[in-house]
Image 1 (tube, rainbow, N blue to C red):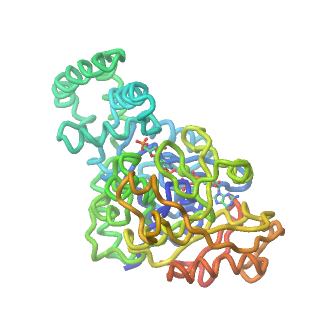
Image 2: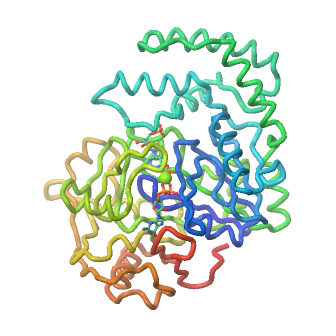
Length: 430
Ligand code: GDP
Ligand code: IMO
Ligand code: MG
């Protein structure tokens, strides 16, 4: 089956959006299957920067249908704003081009209010969420008291449920010291959103199944990253969905037998935004240097990203958790100019060597990274046109990563634009 799942192998912001945009050239469908507008996927097309939060990164290719699957949580206000902004850019964002699952859950105003109120009360125990209401929305989904997008198109049903749910949420908001929310205001606004979104809503599982039967190329665009996964991430410093490739099935309504390849995106160093453990973090000028050179500021919240050396213990674990079959290494250009590069290949706790990512914060707080060093290179990579033209030291860095991980690198990204993309073999990964 010509399917390909793209996932982040670190803590998000690996450059998934850019790679998905490039791969969409050969894709008939691009599907988001989890997360919400906590994601910020950046594309640079003809020197213009676009940040997508909900709409799949395939939207810039005229032949491709973009799908928001049932596993995504949708803030109607955000998606409508995104649709309108892209339309202003002259793009087709019609209901022929963009399909949204009627089963996708709705981020309500009280989800955002609860997220913010909890974070501000938690003070030093805060998660450092994006404040977009992601956690509270998934909680209500699992708690069987959520709204699905289709519910917004049924005003009577919506009104009755909203009355019940809002009473409970307002009680809780007051307890947290936040302002209660007004029923009428929410009801009227969300019914209007339902009318706007109605033409986009469909059974996307069915649509994708038909595409699969016709042998179409279907690309699944993961959001966040492996170590933000609710089960396998650095819990509780994670997001509230399964970010792993396995969730491409449940989050889009397709079975595992249609899934074929999994591409893991690896940033050539490591970043993290928000709180939580980070074994290879550089809290010195070098970390600062990577942040500035790599433009490491959150695409969603603008927060500075924490930076550190590439951690292959993480990436190797991500390969197992996602069944990754090939890799794309991004932001290699950011490392140009450093004399020596370090790569973490194991952790030590006391005398014990660990090669798999630990399960607990307690163990993570004790690990010391074991580094291998590689010579750096001075050359600017932005004009490099093929893998062979990369400096010898850059190829050596990549070869060592590949050997350690045992999975082939198929793409190397050397800048934010579409053009800064080197394919090691064929251009299609399907
Ligand atoms: P995503 O969330 O995984 O899609 O990644 P983000 O868009 O949040 O963050 C990646 C950032 O790096 C964006 O600003 C991209 O424009 C930029 N980017 C992507 N690939 C490269 C690359 O190879 N080199 C450089 N310098 N920037 C890149
Ligand atoms: P993309 O798709 C990086 C982080 C937040 C916080 C934690 C929980 O652009 O890679 P949440 O709002 O999800 O409840 O926040 O997860 N986080 C991300 N970090 N990239 C993302 O998405 C992220 N989405 C959430 O910073 O630490
Ligand atoms: Mg991002």
